[in-house]
Amino acid sequence: SAQVGKKVDVESIEGYEARIFENKKFSRILPYRFFTPENVDNNKKYPLVIFMHGAGKAQGTDNTSQLIHGSKVFVKPDIQAKYPAFVIAPQCPRDVWWVNVKTPESMPPEIEAEVKKEKSKKVFRMKARELMNDPDLYFPLDIQNITEPMQMVSDLIDEIIQKYPVDPDRVYITGGSMGGLGTWCLAYINPKRPAAIAPFCSPSDPENAKMLNKIPIWIFHGDADDYFPVKASRDMKNALEAAGNKDVKYTEVAGMPHGGLSPKAYMWDENKDGEPDVVTWIFAQKRQ
Image (cartoon, rainbow, N blue to C red; front, top):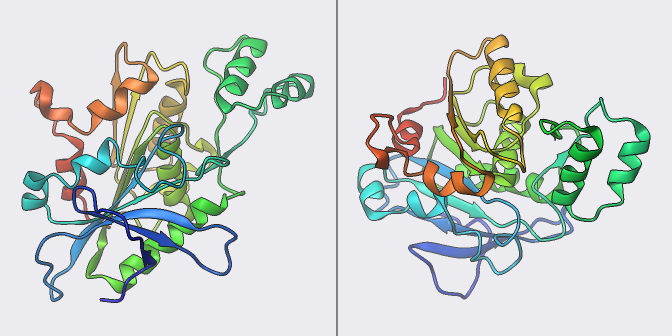
């Protein structure tokens, strides 16, 4: 099949080939890793998983640092033996996020001006909560102003679906933190595309939840998260249910801080509590 993007001459990692995606309409290039299942039969159609990494160390242009958490799980030999699938792991540059967020309407202009001085997105949020004396304050996803890397990921997914034997009814998106925001945002960009999404510890956009009322969604959040407060996921769960989504699963983990959830969430059955893990759940979903 035709290749999407250029193959980069670096080592493949756990079966992930390094590539770059570019298009004249964008000012950037998007590094990504692409995993192809073994012995692809072009007469068959395979699921496609998109893994969206979080902010910080995974960002950049090395096309390696993004291979964390879920990206590792979906290509494990035992999982691929059971669920052969293509996997995309794009990498977000350092100077931007997958998404933009909106200032909460409750924030007075003078506090907003004070907060805007902060360069670090983390400090900016912490300071806003402190000045507003509201530990639950969160910045919802802005689906009007899509960042260029996010638009590129969306275009890349479309091209992969066109050029590889991908089953368009089994396209799955998952990620945590900034990658959770990216997961929500990809669903908003094209709500007809995903068969299911699994976002972790990230805000969404409750105002527009009705756009996602046909997608099976499993939301995870730790209740001790001081980076993206758990209220963000509670609000989104309630908004999705109010909008008529009958397929929302919500897992809230007591005492779990922000950084602790993603590594655990992709191996959810390890505590043998009878909860199916996210991988099994994802592959059981088909687009309605």
